[in-house]
Image (cartoon, rainbow, N blue to C red; front, side, top):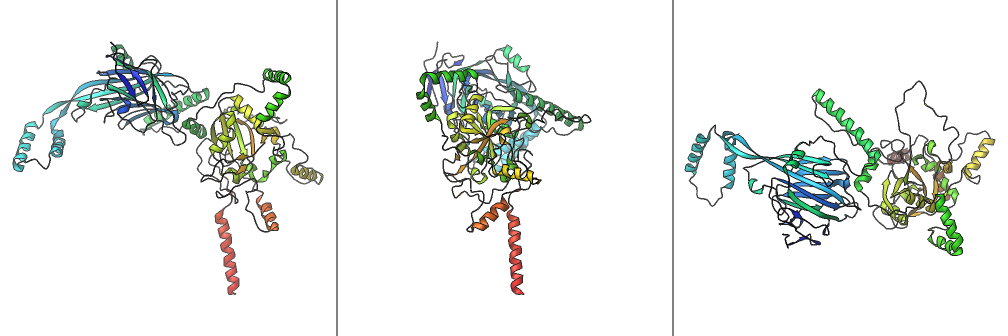
Length: 632
């Protein structure tokens, strides 16, 4: 008969127990669990338990990350608990632990925020008797007896010592038996326990040390460990929980599994799978090398690029889908039909929806501003992905006398927009919240920082990214307009036979100029509200990533400050004398041609910037010269 008791789980939802031999939460009952930092009695229920040495828990959950499950000897967190955290570290790993015994499985993106996923967890307790030499444990027994003796006990000291000596003589060389537990903890996904296993934890417990009263493990609890500092933690939902003893057949199936079995990985794209296979090959080679030379096995470095790894760990909340391809001819035909039907009313509506107007748009000539100052930090797309391909691109072929390593050709990443700031000092005050607010109406999900001047904005689908790129930015003409000062200098240089580089053809590369400036929305320790910066943007490519974590960053321009509002003219400090100002700007407006972008040289490459040490040495030399002249 079903029990009439109700489960009040975390004081949020109520569920009902249906049987005595197996604890079940009805399908219509959903438990909502808010994030918590540690286990408590609220995560367990005294009726949701099974007294068996082999128990299985099946359930469904909907969570963004960090779904925790625990098997405990009592209805609460005990000192011996088997715990599994599904989607740990931003839905990057699955962690199994019992005390200091920890197993981490990666990649393991097993949590889904928008759909129900089935999970199972099994714990098998195998009890064996172990013989031990009493002589080796006499000292341990004495220490335990001494610790249990209190100051209030009246004991004859001489008599106690004689009794201990007699006991040691009687037990010298004898053996005794104590309990030993070889436990195995399994976790997997799906509706069939024993199939699609994610991880296995093999553990050993010894009895005789106060652990017997905490066995077997009969209670199950759920928790939400999504406590992160980068974004607000999200609650999770659990339903269809069933806790029951395992059949002998299932125990046999689980015993045939091993820790080296192929783990099931859910929600991993093809690129990550390929990287995982390559990583497993490296692990096998490293393990074979360690066995051959008798060295300890050292796990190879991570298989994912650092910027992608950082994004996956952050586990951003998904943006909304637009589902509309504005470049599709059918969609354009529908728009034209609506325009003919509604006429001027639709045009007025589209104008009101547009964030920027043509009157307020930034002049297109400003796309080439500070080209000599920040151009070395900009990462242009490879020639094969240019909007207007170069005529000599197809002629680039490898030499026949060299064997080149097979490298995958770069491709476009339509779900990302790569942005680059023209104004260095102002953009250094910009944070993730400012960029997310700038693209807010298009549903961005994550900002992938690549340096002081560049980042990627990730959207939920390619259509949202294309819509944002089309509406926020304006096309840059190719070739550069003749009204550009750099173009005029290049034309005069050709006539005078001087060596002057032509202006960069940003339009042919696919760059677009943002119609309005990016604005900082709030004052913080990084800068002041109202700071504005101009942006270039283009569709991102597979090369717009960081392979490793940056070890150093270039120094900011001399005009940078967090105490005042900055803008396009803030890269250089202001001077009181106009002549001195023009002289300083002319001297500081160029950089050595050897400076490259952080992305072009991975993370080890940095930009030298402006050296404070060199300025101090120059000032010291001037002071010494002045003092020498004064003495003479």
